[in-house]
Length: 63
Image (tube, rainbow, N blue to C red):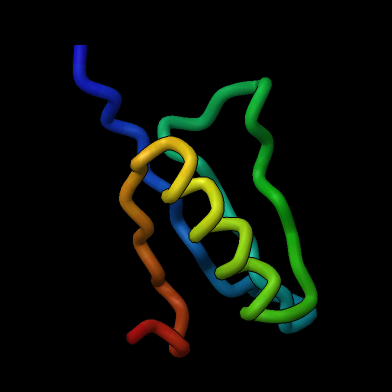
């Protein structure tokens, strides 16, 4: 069975924060909110390295 989870980084609508969400969403993996893009990207990259999941960056900071 292939693990098809993805990690998505989005900007919050209010407050200038960033949200990291693992899709498909599950109760044991809630979205995490960060003050800076760097903090959000660090978590996303750590999850990518640990689990091999793809990071989808939907922010203006994406490369």
